[in-house]
Length: 81
Image (cartoon, rainbow, N blue to C red; front, side, top):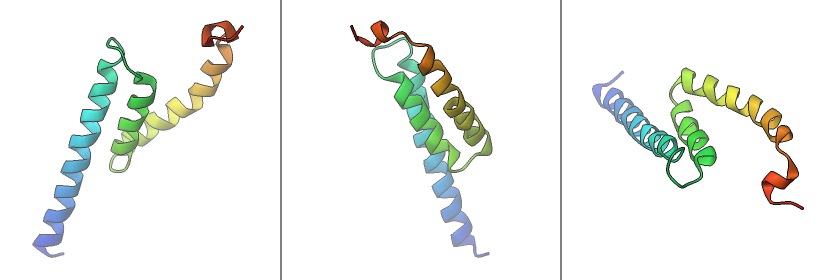
């Protein structure tokens, strides 16, 4: 493998890590700050999952648990009558 290809792969991975961790960090901050943390955190994990197996596994666990949690929410908590 040529050194240029190796460098481009490393650069892509560095960009993915930087963007993914930034989005994930913003999502975690939104847990205590106003904002849609429940949307932003999976997006950050999705970005990281393109390069890392641990992020992919964590994202799958979140996807499995989300429908179970949504079924436990009472309709009045969602603004229904």
